[in-house]
Amino acid sequence: MRVVVLSDTHAPRFWKRCPASVAAHLRSADLILHGGDVCVAPVLDELAQYAPVVAVCGNNDGPDVVAWGAPETVEFDIEGLPVAMIHDSGQKTGRLARMRRRFPDAGLVVFGHSHIPWDEEQDGFRVFNPGSPTDKRRQPHGTIGLLDVVDGVLMDARIVPVTR
Image (cartoon, rainbow, N blue to C red; front, side):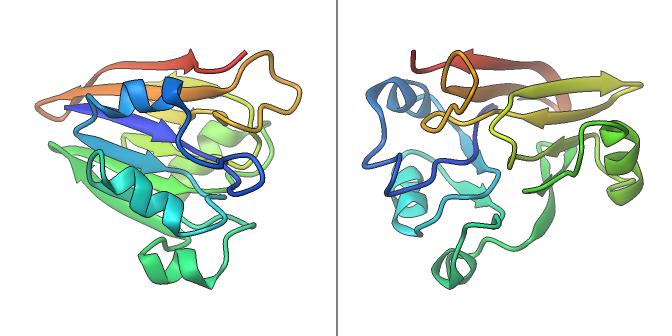
């Protein structure tokens, strides 16, 4: 299963419509995860034209995003891989241990908020932030995440640049 992971799209200020470089990845997605700060629910509708979407609400998301179906946290399986999502995972120091305590049944925690890509794994537990495709802040590129899951195993996780 090919999973495309986005966060912090910040529409309509930074995401007017899906950038072509992001859409190129979405076309092959079986599932899309959004780690919050969508800002307006129509972005989730736009993403859902490519594949099913699971999203959490962020600190900049309004009631329309929550009404769309984006809770503060969510836990679910991707082909047997236990996944949790939250927008703000807190400071980077101690993040892996903190997320393991918060989501003890997860093998993967997806988060956003910082706009800084992050991929850390220890003993089969991974925390993953795709960064932002549209509001890169001090990062060299806008980024998204790509996950490949086969029979409940995360075979590959990578962060890829989509803007300069």
